[in-house]
Amino acid sequence: MIYILYRLQKDSSCKSAYFKLRFWRTRYFWLPALTFMGVAFMGEAFMGEALLANDFPHRFNLGSIPSPEEISVLDTAIRPDGRGLPPGSGDSAQGLIVYQQQCQACHSEGGKGGLFDPLVSTQPSVIFAFNEAGARPTPTIGNYWPYATTLFDYIRRAMPYNAPGSLSNNQIYAVSAYLLHANGIIPETLTLNASNLAGITMPAFGHFVPDDRLSTPSVK
Ligand code: HEC
Image 1 (cartoon, rainbow, N blue to C red):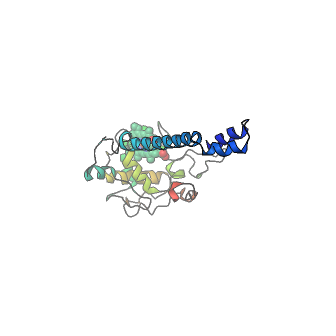
Image 2 (spheres, helix red, strand yellow):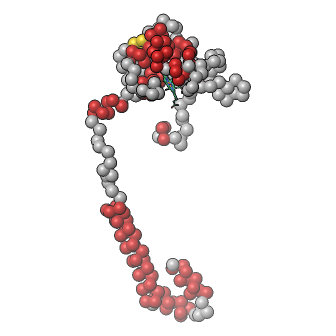
Image 3 (cartoon, rainbow, N blue to C red):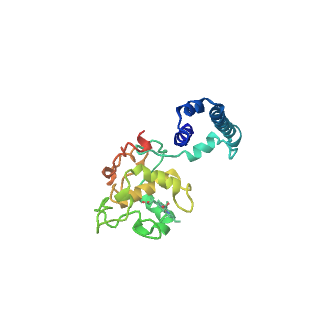
């Protein structure tokens, strides 16, 4: 504003030094300038206070605070290193029965096709070649998943699709063993449990790298 007044005054026809000196000193300059600054300051203070005090609630009063029991039902995450795995065990032969009864309708016999995602690759030797023209396989447990423990976590959390959470821990170990064996990753006779599942090295493991871009929140 001061600059505009300065320009106005500078460009005006009255160019005498006397006028310039007097103009800055008169109430015609100071009164409007001070009034303008005062109104701007008060307006800002008033708006800020109104936003904080009235318009923005500290709580929305939606939902309720979950009990420790409610949290424990959902807090089932299993880490890649196996932390969080529950007790229990199962092998591929037991898993075949679970698979036939609970999974096959959607994932097909042997898991290679079907209504929904294939779980076993039809090209077992092609691992993680998702950028290569021609060979590009469909992602499956065998060619894409980096951790065997994620299989247990995912099945317990989400499968069977029509009844997630309905399988016992033994059934989940067993069907995991069946799927890992079908993908050629473990021998048919291996009984899976909380202490050996994390030790299985998945074929795609080495294809994942830590995200060390400085811009991502995960490394801050
Ligand atoms: C009613 C159909 C249905 C049944 C039954 C079912 N699934 Fe699934 N499954 C799906 C669908 C749909 C998806 C894809 C879900 C998604 O992408 O969110 C899926 C995805 C999966 C995946 C992830 C595949 C991937 O690589 O992304 C696995 C593993 C899996 N199912 C295992 C099982 C197992 C084990 C069972 C039996 C205990 C089972 N499913 C039963 C429908 C089913």
